[in-house]
Length: 259
Image 1 (tube, rainbow, N blue to C red):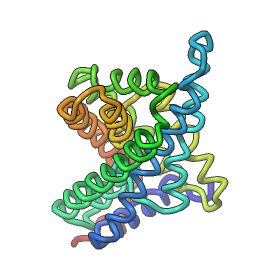
Image 2 (cartoon, rainbow, N blue to C red; image 1 turned 180 degrees about the vertical axis):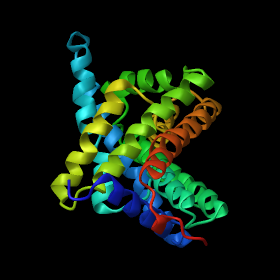
Image 3 (cartoon, one colour; image 1 turned 45 degrees about the vertical axis):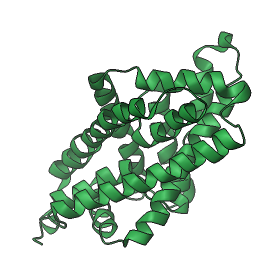
């Protein structure tokens, strides 16, 4: 580890402060990429597991989980904005009094919208138009999407907490490394873990549920009823269990600067 946890707090605060200063066009381009990259990671997972025999059991889940981290790797290394990561960075900047609440809300809102556009783009054009989530892979797509929407509000909410606790930790750990290889390793295992466990990620769901909708299954109302509790759970996972806990543990006098 190149930076210790106390130093990572300061890095996260600085990055969160920078994120709220981005222009809307910049947020659009990077947010679109963030949503598309997560969708591509999920698409790789579907293609990996979609035709594996049932007899392989949970090993198939492991194989899918092993390729899913591609999405966050592309975002962190290549550049992109992901609302679940911003939930951690922007909130810790707010706790450090570097930004205002309205800036946090605006950042989360715009990045969520642009992530949605990127995820739906991949779901429609790659998943539906050229059929990568359909054909032999349709059964897997529908089964996965149904598993998301069938969860109750509170099940989806709590699952969202667990998911973004791990996703935010993946981003957090990546701040501790300077090298690309170190960042990739830091990202890989927490992301693989959340997929193995089966937690729900709001941007990932923005891909898999529309993919099923475009295939003629599910509805946009079911999509909305899932996205709301998962978004809220993701926010709690990042803000409370990462930003707040680490800020309160490692805050410095330098962090507590007034606006």
